[in-house]
Image 1 (cartoon, one colour):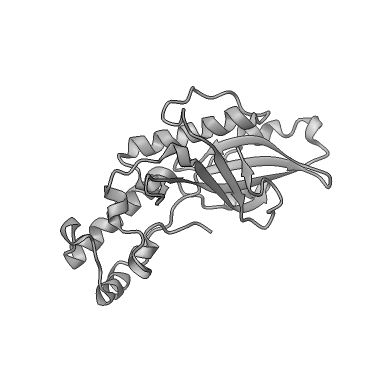
Image 2: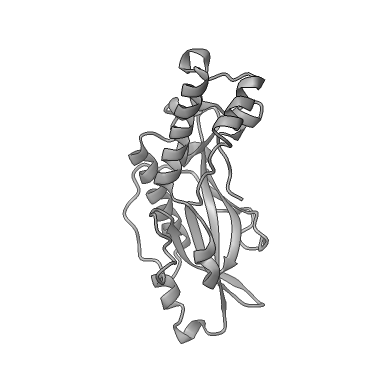
Length: 230
């Protein structure tokens, strides 16, 4: 299930507030990164999943914060602190915080003996990559894959700050930097996992010193890449 980065601010203990968004905290690459694979479906069902995409999700989070500030009168000076009544008011007038997006996906082939990663991609456009026939999916019609079923996993990228606070891509400003982190994460994974249907990506810059990536699989098909370090 997609996460709600602002949920602790509105419905929890305020362990995350807009300060996390506006602090300009950058990922500490020594702490590595995490990818949570939350959902898995057969490849032919991929276009039924509403993955969202980073630009929309990034904008929705910033717009939600602006709406809450306008409604309640809070701002940076009081630490964006909301009391219980204000939180109730926000939920009644504005609604729940927005969901993040699934920004990375893995395509695999599998049979009763094995499961193999064959493609890594990012969800970075308004229209699903799968809606009009994904190039990798077309390549999987090659007879060499006839003995395999095909599956796709959708996941979320997460970093840690210097203070070991969670830093989803929606927290990173400006948007162009968040977008670059996503592109380089895709390139990082392709370079190290070498899926056979991917072409090599551009060199790393922002993530050149990333120590590692932990892949956690929370989907129903959780045997694949469970607690796997890249």
